[in-house]
Structure formats: structure tokens, C-alpha cells
Length: 301
Image 1 (cartoon, rainbow, N blue to C red):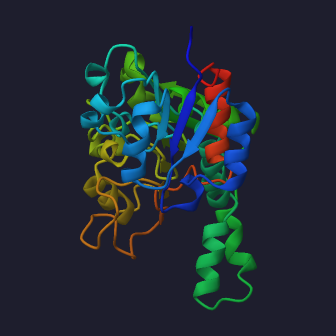
Image 2 (image 1 turned 180 degrees about the vertical axis):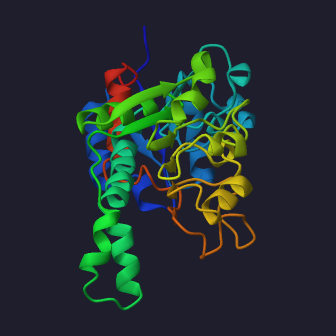
């Protein structure tokens, strides 16, 4: 006879959007079939782990598996494969579950970057900071339409597809680049207005967007990276922006995080650069989205 599910949740995170709160817990309890235990620290988690059939965590060390004798499902809201032990390290009978819902949130961040750039919002703010009260005549060259432009999305998995669908709904032509058609990247970039990078940080993605790729982009084109920072050659990008070979770069991720003052893209005088602190998926709905994903995939029964 199947034992009753024992859900153990440890999602205590400094960033509010990624931390379990009362509303998110209510969503989970409305979906889960079984008993729910919430803990706030590692010691309490390890104490409760032997009874858990499902563990929902941000991170899990492989050394903890001997304690987890009843564990069947090990889940994390994060998309990164580095958050949980590798497939080779997973014990028999335990299934790992990563979040795959992020595109619904991150696609809105990408759209925000594109519209802020195309409609001149960043340029208007620059004028505002300089003390210009009414730069009406100066602004018109910096306002264009997003509809009718072309985006190349490098990394066309679940997140890339979600971004593409959102952009296509806004009248943007989308070309998705995966490993199978990577050879199309440079030719497609010659006519692209946007390069959106949504690559994971796994093997083979280091510096895929290097100086040779950046040279294929139009001077009026913009780079957006919401994947992982290792995919972009940061020195080459800083040089391209300073030389005005690109119109802008909107970056949510960096090779080394948190960003430090000695990083190639940390200077405050790089033209066209806007930095975001790895927050493209920030939203109050983040944790509930994951709980609903788990329910839809059958992990909460």
C-alpha cells in the first residue's frame, strides 16, 4: 500500500520573490495530497528529511541522501541544473524536478527591455538626469516601433520559446537558434534588430557570443541576455558598446555574480548598457507558478 505523502518544504531565501510566503503556502496546500511540513533552516530540514517523500528546496547536497530513506521526489523551483545533485548522483527511485515555468515571467522582462529601448525611455531618462526639461526635438530619432522588427533568440528551449511567443504576438519576427542550427546564427544576425540570449550555463555555452558574433550584428541592434552570463564574452561586449558597434545591451546575468567593481561590464560610462541584478524572473507569482507546475505534472498526488 502506498504511504501517505509527506511534503517537506524548505524555501527560505533572502530574496522575497524566491521565498515561501503565506499566500504561496496556501496555494500549495490547496493542490497537494498529503501532509505538509515547512522548515526555515538546514538543521530543521535534516531533522525532518527521514520522513519526507517529497522535498521542495532551493539546493540539496548529495551527502544528505542517506537520511532521505523515503524520498521519491526532489524538487527545486530553479531552472539551473547545478542546484540539485546530478542525474548520476540521484539514488534509484528518486526523481528530480526543476522549474520550467520561468518563461512566463522572463518573457515580460525581455519585452520591457525592447519597448524601453525602442520607444526612447532610456534616452529620455538620460536627458532627465542631465537636467534637460523638454528634449522634444532631440527625442524623435530615438523612438521606433517594436512591431515589424526581427529577433534572434539564442537558446530556444522552454524559456526561449516563451519569449518568442510573446514577441511574435507583438509583431516581431522570431528566429530560434538551437544546437542543431547554430550555424544559422551569424547569417541571421545580419538582419536582426535584437539578439536575445536564453542559454543555460552548462557545458558548451562559454563565450558563444564572442567578438565574431557581435561583429555580425547591425550597429542599430541590441543584445539582451537573460540566460547565463558565461555565454557572453564580456570584454568583447564592452569594447563593442564603447565603439558604438551596438546600439545597446540589456543584461540580467553576468559571468561572475554578484557583479564586482573590477568586472568588464561594471563601469558606469559604457554607452547603451543597462544592468539588471539577475532578476528577470522576479514576481510574486514565482513560487505559486512552480507549485502549479508540479501539480500539472502529477508530482503532488
